[in-house]
Image 1 (tube, helix red, strand yellow):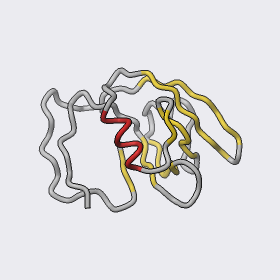
Image 2 (cartoon, helix red, strand yellow):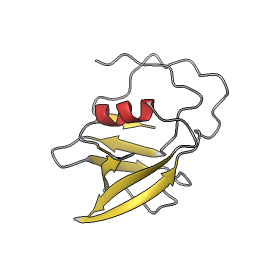
Image 3 (cartoon, helix red, strand yellow):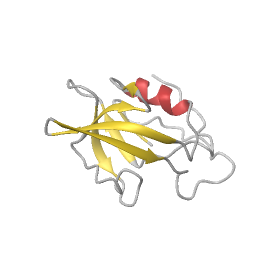
Image 4 (cartoon, rainbow, N blue to C red):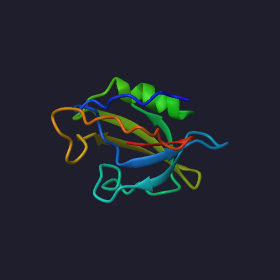
Length: 117
């Protein structure tokens, strides 16, 4: 099990919940209304194939990519919907309400097989 880590106040916010399954890329299971991907019409059921120019086949891939980014970064993302691909460019904000100091890490880790950022 992965140990929880402190989230930097400069960490980018996607406004997405992503999950792994047996298909290519990561499955979008939730899009936060008003978030950066909601504004680009991404919806639950879409698939994230590449993020910041790198293929994402696992949640660990996405975590690794996000660790190198800060709020305000602009990245290219390839999304798939119903077999059709879309190339998007998105600027990732800081999470709304994020303090300048990191909040304490919750004692319970997120559910296995999902990340929300």
